[in-house]
View 1: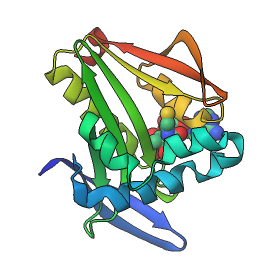
View 2 (view 1 turned 30 degrees about the vertical axis):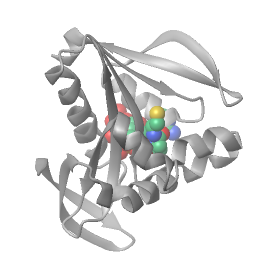
View 3 (view 1 turned 45 degrees about the vertical axis):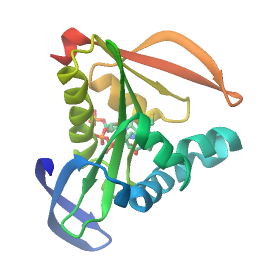
Amino acid sequence: MALVAMKVFVTIGSMNRNVIFSIRAATSDDVQGILQCLRAAFAPFRTRYTPAAFRDTVLSETRLPERMKRMKIFVAEDECKNIAGTVGCSISGEKAHIRGMAVRPALQGCGLAAKLLAAAEGEARAANCSRMTLNTTEPLERAIHFYRRHGYRASGRVRNWFGMPLYQYVKQIDALR
Ligand SMILES: CC(C)(COP(=O)(O)OP(=O)(O)OC[C@H]1O[C@@H](n2cnc3c(N)ncnc32)[C@H](O)[C@@H]1OP(=O)(O)O)[C@@H](O)C(=O)NCCC(=O)NCCS
């Protein structure tokens, strides 16, 4: 069931058209589409990731279903059921955490990421979470700009993640309400 539907004016190559995207909870039928979306979105950063960090980011046919047991995954799909974007949200007590945010490169800048983020934040709000966290890496400058614009701030916590620094960002619940 779609949580949100939005019309997006899409330009691909020389083609312009309006496409309706729906944001909905993912199912096991979405595994291939989510994996393709993750691979496409993170491909430009592959050379700046360690191999293990990249594998942990783009997942696999076995690792994504495992993540789906721990996290609620949302997808943005078009009318032809192509997955254009995804995000995962896990809840632990009063804390919520986002992982695996990605929008296919051709569709970045269309507002899909904001809708996916809103779906994840809605999940956190419904569970009465007091804060939302996420982790990001230095090469993901566009993502960092996006998160900052949506109220996330660096907490100062940095840890070693598969040989590269991982920066935690946080948004407090007051901002989520
Ligand atoms: C992160 C992501 C989901 C955001 O989706 P999006 O459609 O690109 O988001 P938006 O276009 O709404 O916002 C991106 C912002 O970054 C800005 N931006 C674009 N390129 C940038 C760059 N190289 N450096 C900094 N900011 C940049 C855009 O102008 C926009 O800001 P604005 O809204 O103030 O104009 C998407 O870019 C993506 O999939 N990136 C690759 C995977 C990734 O980094 N995932 C996050 C994991 S933590």
